[in-house]
Image (cartoon, rainbow, N blue to C red):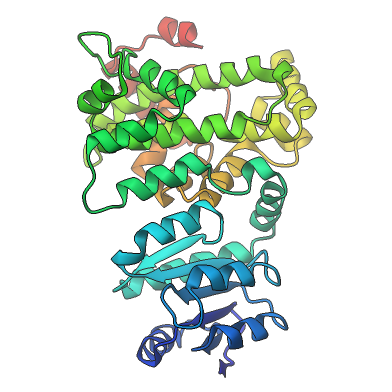
Length: 395
């Protein structure tokens, strides 16, 4: 059944329960979408063979087939459509797997918040109608290494989504990946966490830093390593340079985030700062010669790295990084901050923290940042006792 409305985007909604469909119809009837509602998965698939909506939203539990099965069939006729899953708490493990496999872009927990759901639909339709975002998504999905979140990412999210889980379970899962263990212990023993004694095991790191924060850090490490996996060995030293700069900057971001009035989330700032340059890894993986050309132009001083990217590469690292993290279902606040870490910080505290840390780390002093932060950069440099000499040394 179709409700033809204005042309602000098109949405297909599938749920076998009529009251749910009626509730959703009432919620979005004034949003101006072309909406098509179905109670049958087979009817919805028949419709999708003839029409390509901007968004598909489906319930998880249905008698004909599950929402995950439906979306798997829907991907063939509508590969670029944004896919949203409605689910209850009892389906969380299945939905996490669907996210990890790339079947689902977003999931909404029942009962949903009306305003948040409308906001998500506006975002999803807007993303589909953004030519740049669609081009970025298409290019990323075309490369197998970027197509969906790493398997490890999905397993870890599935584990911590359970109502009850133990530190031991999380530790065992992390220990399945020796490269992640090595990177985690490096981070845990850095001066930024100020451990009194060396941390030698994942369990010690989890107890010292906190299990929730360990999971977020591990997911960031996993994303970085997975994105790097397809890079030619001849370019690995550039990956190490990017990673080293990210670690230095993230430590400063964590210190600022801990003390930022009204924010006080050093671990979120740390993870976001670690990930903000992951777009450079995408460039190294997809067009290494162009990346090196940008480095050469920046070294000569004829252009900044950011300016060179705009002239040489098919997309800038902030655009690529944000799109990759959104594709891999990282939190929206991290995606937003990564997308804007060279642009307007506006009133977003996380973006402001990332930009200030970026300048104070000395790695991107000539790259663009929001000029309204200049006084705050000076203030935080003094507060953290980061002199110009130390900044230059960090670079």
